[in-house]
Length: 66
Image 1: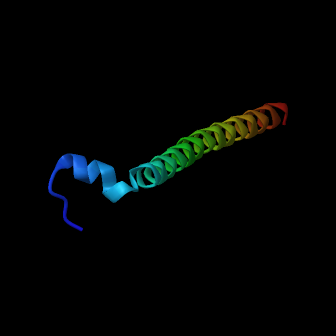
Image 2 (image 1 turned 60 degrees about the vertical axis):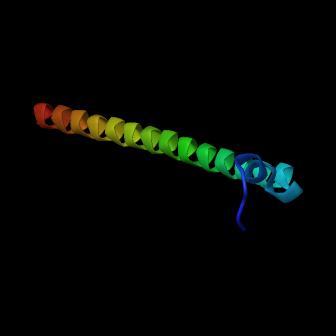
């Protein structure tokens, strides 16, 4: 589809509301997905680091008691 002007492009042949709403919903959902995934990844990495530190401390205390 070829548009004669920017306003024709933004109007999308009379379907602008539905077209731009679908783009908006899609980008919103993708943004939420990316943000929540990044937060969850960071939380999991922090939890793994805590467990590794705890295991290291336990090994140190066991070796000093022996």
